[in-house]
Amino acid sequence: ALTASLKKEDGGRDHFYIGSNKEMAREFIDAVAMWAKAFNAAAEEICEEVITDEDKDILTFVVYFASGFKVKALSSNPSNIRGMQGNVTIDEAAFHEKLDELLKAVLPLKTWGGKIRLISTHDGVDNLFNQLIQESRAGKKDYSIHTITLDDACNDGLYRRICQVRGMVWSPEAEAEWKEGLLRNTATREDALEEYYCVPKNGGGTYIPRSLRERAARGTGKVLRFTGTPEFNALTESQRRADIREWLETVVRPELEKLPKNLRHCLGEDFARSGDLTVLAPVTVNDDTTREVPFLVELGNVPFKQQEQVLFWLCDRLPRRDGIKMDARGNGQYLAEQAAERYGDEVEQVMLSVAFYRENMPRFRAAFEDDELILPKHEDVINDLGAIQLLRGVPGIDDSRTRGSDGHKRHGDAAVAIFLGFLASKDDCHRYELHRLNRPAKPEERNARRQMKLTRGLKNEGGLL
Image (cartoon, rainbow, N blue to C red):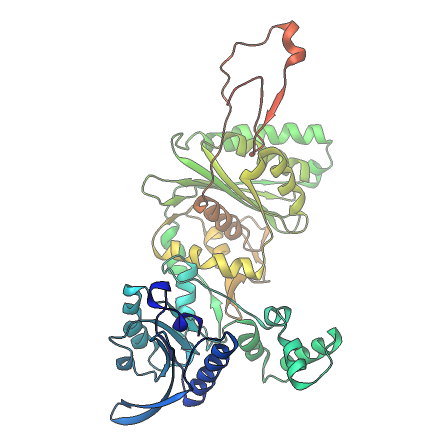
């Protein structure tokens, strides 16, 4: 109503509504007329027009504005929108039989500055509407995604408005009971999630096919493992530190020294203290923009301080280090906080959640589809990536455990570390360093020395930026 009421020089234009039935069209046009009156926009009463749709006369509705523009409801026949100019709203897009053809017809309207909006609940994970969302999250399309769940609507006052219209008294208890009734009375839990929480139905199975995982596992990187035995964990902290230092120098350093010094490197980490594994996944950003995991570090049943020792040793030596993402759930929060204290804003402490997986996992799968990832050729790595499952239409790590080739239990640990390392490599992250320009201070000048701390937590004494 606001856009159609404006003059052309002020950004006014026609607006076309495409719903799946006549009742939806009438309801939309009624709402436009109501808002036109509320904003005191000069508009005529609702008009009815007849258009020809596949040799049938179809009654449609339109509101004309004094600006010369209109808001008009059209049928979902793609031919009716061709040649038009203006904005388009496709309502319940997932339920249009010819959504692909309809999009083909409306997208040219963007040439003259028109906006295309697809609004819908989900209709299954394989529906084109959901595929467009997944491709947008993967960065393959430029659509802007807006997710509004029942909770979001209630937080914005939906149930309060219902109470106001129906003459009911609102209370938090009444709202909670109303929401619970909606969910309880839906046929199945999957239906409720799809209708009220934007989770497409019928989604299940492996998220990244094994063929794609095996194709990505074409690298020569090794999986470097250290297991904390009962004897090791019974040592003093200083003794454990010495053992870990020796392992890092003899096992990890040879692989670290193979890394190209001129390329950017990032790191992803998945944490576990016992039971599962802590995995550190360095990621090299190659000149051709592919992302390669040159090796993996796996720690099983290793105390917190020694995990911190390994993390710091590795991160301190990564060439052109440019981003670290760490699993900050549960006990992992300690290690993530220590890393943030040492490296500053370069570290992102990630709280893995359904929402985080939903927003970021499509980009990860797209990297497999586009041959952007090069991973160690190791069966445990391939199997860990298979732990990424579609759970009620949303990708995530399932609850099942597998047993690796070394006998340890695994819970998709390498998959999470590689996933976070990949995301870190995609972020715009810049590391600042200090270079000393002055001569070393004389003994009598040492009292005047000071520390400088930059946003990344880098420290230097008596230097200039």
